[in-house]
Structure formats: C-alpha cells, structure tokens
Length: 409
Image 1 (cartoon, rainbow, N blue to C red):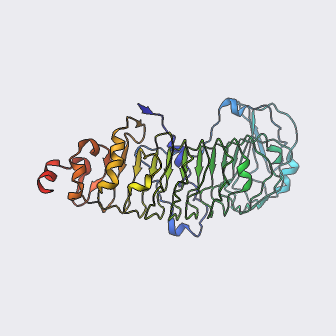
Image 2 (cartoon, rainbow, N blue to C red; image 1 turned 135 degrees about the horizontal axis):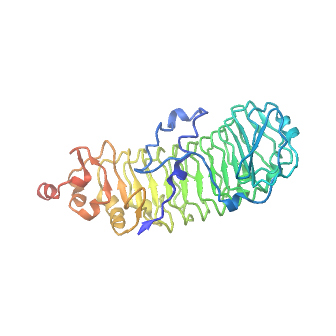
Image 3 (cartoon, helix red, strand yellow; image 1 turned 90 degrees about the vertical axis):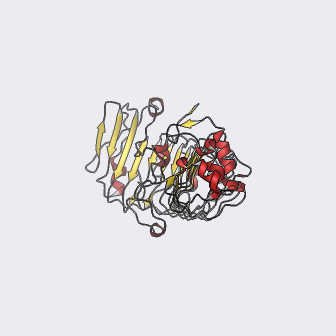
C-alpha cells in the first residue's frame, strides 16, 4: 500500500530559514548546515506560506483599520484586508490608527516587517486574523495586552526573527490560534501562554536559547501536529510529552547528549523525529521507544553514534526508516541491524519521498568485512540497506554474496 505522504516541507521548512538574522552563542558550535543535508532524497523544501481552508479563514467579519502615514491598507478580491505598518516608528501610533469599522472582510492580516520598532504597546480594538510581526531586529517588547482584542480571531501569529526575550507574557486564550512561530529570538523558556492554545497545529521555537522544556509545558495542546525546537540549547529532548496528534518532532542541531527512556511513549501519531546534528554518542535501553501507530522515520544523521543497539527500541515500535548518514558507525553489526531490517522487510508501506522502509548508512568510515556476511548473503534484507562500503568502494546493494561465502567462514 502507499503510505499517505507526511508533508516533509512542513517538517523541515524552518530548519535553515530561522537562522538568517541572528547569531547566537551556540551557533558556532552546532551551526545550521548551509543546505538541508539531513533531508532524505526527494524531500521538498517550502517557505512559510501558511494556508488555511476557506472555511477556516472566513470566520465572520473583522474590524478594519483607518490608515495613517505609517500604515497602508488594501482589500484584495478575496476579501482579505491587509494592513502594513512596517514603516511604523512609534508603537503608540499604531494604537491611534485603528477604528472599529466593519468592512465585511473575511480576514484581517497585519504585517510589521523590517521596522525600527523596539516595542508594540497596543493594537487598539482591531480583531486580527493573521499577525506577521517579523524581521524587526530591535523589537524586544510586546505588551501583555497588545493582542487581547484578537484573542478569539487570531489564527496565525508569526513572531520570527525579532529580539524577543524571556519571559514573553501575552494575555489571551487564543483558542483558535493554529500556527505560531517564535523562531529566531532570544527565548530561554517556552512562554507559558502557549500551553493554552488548544487549537494549535504548528508550533515552532527554532533558533532560540531554550535549555529545558519543563514537564507539562506543552501537554495541553491536543491538536498539535508539528513541534520544531531546532537549534536551541537542549541537552536532552523534552520528555513525557502527551501530544496525541503530534506527527513531527524536530530537534535538529541541539547539543543533546542523552535520551530519557520512554519519554515519547505517548506519541501515538508520531511519523517523523529529527535528532540529526546532535551530540548523541550512545543510546540507553528504551531511549528510542516510540509507541506510534503509524509508519515513522527517525533521523540520527551526523551524530557521533558508533552503534545503534537493539535495546534502544525496547518497549516501542521499530522505525520504518532510519537515517544514519554521517554517523561514526563502522561495521554492520548483525545484533544491531538484523532485527531492524527483518522488520522492514515485512512492511508493504511505500512512502512518496522515502520509498520502501530502509536504513541509510552513508558515511566515510563504514567497512564491509566478514561481519557483513549475514547481510551480503541475504538479498531480501539487502534491499532495505543503502550506503557504501568504503573499504571496498562499492555500494551495499552490489555486494557479491559468493565472495563472502568463499572468503568468510
């Protein structure tokens, strides 16, 4: 059967876009790769062009804005009322510019991008549907009540690449908020109010300075599908996550050195885990235990792993796809890989981007001596292994079983 495609562009979109305007202390150590080398063949990259269904977007009429010298307004043919205040200098000017007129538009989008603002104090009484306050290098403060009038109407809140610090306190339940990006700021903790956004589908906190996600911080988000913590300062992944709808967990480029066994056992919908470019060198028993009910991929690419022990999967479901590219694995240990490849060989799922279940072994140190005979002489399992034997300068799939039968005992 063909497995329904997980939108890899949603999973990966933020990975290398988020570091474009800020240089944190940890970037020199971890660094975001210039290209998304962790992506699997065929994976597409998208920008942050969030789209919502017409039914979701057209949620009644919204208030309009009376524009002044620092804001421009435009209503397009779809009924979207766009307010651009990127020229604003004084945050109080924004407050004076708003009115409560009803234009009958389907949604109101407010954009403040590349401005010289240092603070947002008030946005008046307008009900915003999509707020894009991004790439404002001096914006370090948002008043707690600034978005209060939009608490019910807000669907998208884009606060990328500003200068926001912790604690970031914003009042409002934001019960209808679906997309939230806080990428590229200087946050050290996850804002508490985020856990009240029960309709949230997509949460990105990439490229910040978050060192720890306290237990329960994100456990009130029943609809969350995508969580991006790429390029923070986490030394271990967030544990005890109770997110029944979570499909994608991106932890790339964190200084993670250890995994908490069973931390993701409640993630029943998980399809993608990215631990690439972390500092994992060993895996404890049950550290990769995931009880997902879906085919899933885990990326451990470009980590200092030398082994992928079988006991790491204990208590969970074996992954359908495992990315070990750029690791320090030197041999194809039968104890580590036969159970995993045997499980893959039984699967009929074929992913649109990742293909049949498989392990990607590509690195510069893998050798195929007699320890690899078990794989070289088993054509069924070999179909699910991809990589190169550096000692023989040959792709795994071209290994000659007769050679191993003759020269290996």
